[in-house]
Image 1 (cartoon, one colour):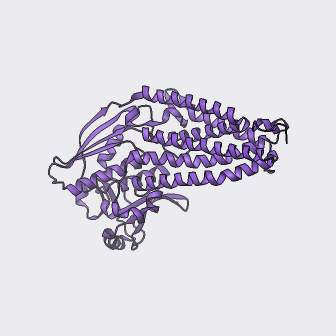
Image 2 (cartoon, one colour):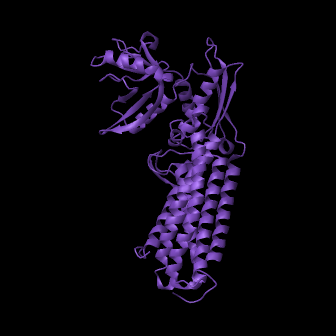
Image 3 (tube, one colour):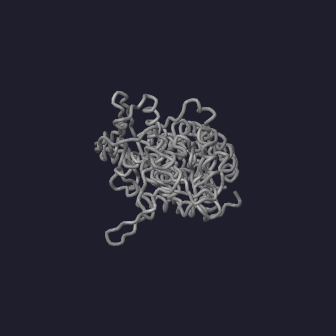
Amino acid sequence: MKNVKKPVFFIVAAFILAMAYLTIFGVYTYYGDTETVRVRGVRDIRWGIDIRGGVDVIFTAPEDYNAQRHEMDAARSTIEIRMVTRNITDYEIYVDYATSRIIVRFPWQAEDVSFDPERAVMELGETALLTFREGFPWDSAGNLMNPEELPLVITGADVRRASPQYHEGKYLVSLELEDSGRDVFSEVTGRLRGTDTPISIWLDNFPFSWPMVNQQITGGRATIEGDFTFDEVRSLADRINGGALPFKLEIDSFSTISPTLGIGARDAVALAGVIAFAVIAVIMIFLYKLLGVVAVFALLGQAVGAIAVISGFFPGAQSFTLTIPGIAGIILSIAMGVDANVITSERIKEELRAGKTLDGALQAGYKRAFSVIFDCNITLLIISFILMGAFGTPDSIAAVVLRPLFFMFGPGAAGAIYSFGFTLTVGAILNFIFGVTASRLMTYSISKFKPMRKISLYTRERKGAV
């Protein structure tokens, strides 16, 4: 407590208010009619189908392909994984086994410059069949070859995981192969090592990479190197991860769908949220006085932080689809933040009633409250982590950690549940940052000002100053 200086309160408060402004309004620059997003604001949030509407697309198997039931299930699972990989967490997928059709519905937002629904549909279709083939994708005349004319090495089904990496000053894609492709890949890379023949990587009839073979790959792990940017290797890894379909997907129809709630309902929810926050702020200040003021700043920081994560405020982050379950997760986590501040304030009041000095009461109150707050938020994090591991993408941190528990179930991405778990996780982490750390620093700091050391500013039970 002695190390916390007086200006800390104003620094933390200014940071929260500045972040609130930037998160709400964003930062945009204009050059003529061209708008560049510098900092994403509330308007850049991608809303779910229930709020904004979305896209309805029907995929089918080729006419000459007799898709089996297990293959349709595999195709559905892969599409689910692709959706969550693209941060599209509010979607609906239905399979018609009789006609070999997959009906997919997902949200869209016209103002979101980073998300093009038509392009997303095309990517879902064009990444249907991934193959690794031996040789250049062009002939000696510079014409694109038919991939069937090149010897097949492995398919997307032989790739367990692809992930972007940064090594020795350059970006690359790391590949981990299944047992089914290790021996074949080892034999081909051993034969092509040091030659002028690459291994070309195809998505349907389009080649997107043709790396040269520098060494024989015997351990089932390989890297794709080139003059890549981070966005390029991330896109390449996503395409490889989404290319393990048993057959090629074809687009049967494409249309837009109307929202079930609409923008009006979204605006009503936003207005209700602002009113509820204002009411909570008044109650907190009335009951806990100066501690209530600190609690309001902490809750504001937590709410703004959650919106910032969802909108893609931070560099390198993508916008996240905000759905009704996701909003429920935010509300629940903020309620946990209110509990944290109430518990702390009550503990401090108890210490003051017991006759301790202000400094002693503040230290003892935060110390006694922390164990309860810690237990509650750790429990929330465990629950949200399990939800994200069970219903997120197989290559996510949560899924990898929990794979020994869920390996028998296979991939089962479910956007609505994943969205709820994601916002719960963000809220619990922000509660530690703002509800515990920031509020403690602000309270210690403001209590060093002589006018703020009156006991009546912290509780009604005792008078005077300490």
